[in-house]
View (cartoon, rainbow over the protein chains, first blue to last red):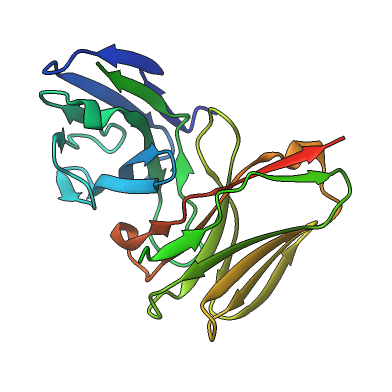
Length: 114
Length: 111
């Protein structure tokens, strides 16, 4: 009963380093998303994917890259980390985008850039 | 102006109280309205959704939408300590990329 699994849970990065946040889901969902959540700012969509091989930018894509080689996995790559990328990152998935569509979120990855 | 506005709280109420959580939105194109609950150090989970104006009830929870005033509410009856969480309202026009979240209201239900 895994759902959406994210790793790592916590990470400290130095400015300029790169890293990948891993996300996998076992619900055979077509749609996958990456959000970031900052205090007082709500959830902002970084990238999303409507299926394997298809990705698109969300509201705040700068400084990030994604790929979707399989239905299950949707890693988020941070290149040249900056303090502004200190945030909580949530991966999510859903079967469709129709009315009442349930988006399932992972438990989050806390990233600090120093 | 943010597309979805939500009072961040915190809101503290005694156990058994009726809680009212509210959001306002600016885009009249929004058709679907959702409430997510987020426990500390966890991801959000969908609590309820409604379409257009009206009420929807699910156990102790009632979601209300007034499109004429662009106002959405979540009422929690007989609040319990387990209801202590951050509640996020969200709206969207019908596509995944257009899901817009409020900032969340932190609720604390005390014994």
